[in-house]
Image 1 (cartoon, rainbow, N blue to C red):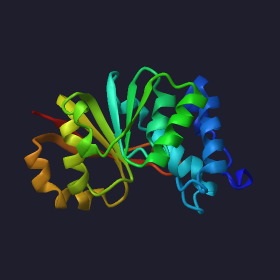
Image 2: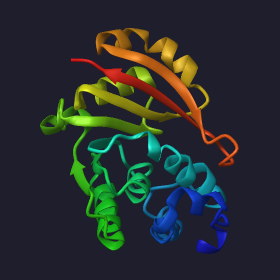
Image 3: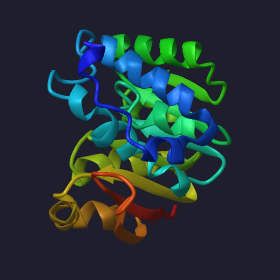
Image 4: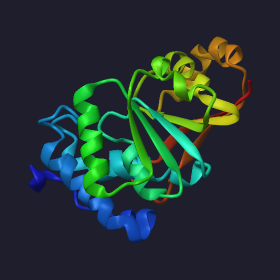
Amino acid sequence: MTSLLEQEPAAAGELFGDRIDLARQFAGALAEHGEQRGLIGPQELPRLWNRHILNSAIAAPLFPAGRVGDVGSGGGLPGIVLAIARPDVEWILIEPMERRCAWLNEQVSSLGLDNVIVERARAEEAGRYEGMLDAVTARAVSALRTLIPWTAPLAKDGGELILLKGQSVDGEIEKAAKVIRKHKLTNSRVEIIGEGVIAEPTRVFRADVRA
């Protein structure tokens, strides 16, 4: 299956720097085992770098040093990718499915990532992190009106939501207006990052969390 893996884009080296070998190792593991283990779909290998890995990595500079939660980490997109790109951040990968947690722990071990904790839990059950995280992220998990109630309670007062979204994010914001007010999010906006750097720029919903 690795023969189908998309050729590494030039931007990968720029985004990962001296940690590019770890990114390559992770991409290779996803290519070899991802479909079999239900982590990626059968059509994803030819676009694995641009659509998934670089799409996640481009957001790395947005995160504060400290503790960041990745809700619904799944196959490690964006959590493992971000942990490679930002070794100065402690990443809490929150994932309810046992088989996916097993995969995440395998990757943490094989990549030697000492800045990652894998937490098997649903976001709404991860109570020990409630109000404790400097930022919370998620990618391809759910629409904002569902995702915000899962993620906002985990952020501390003054923390931030940094949610990687698709092209429909503006419509999601309209439908999430009530939950944005309910969870006291301020300065909510969409940023498009990576234009001119990666093939598929990333849309990021950002908002500050106030207790």
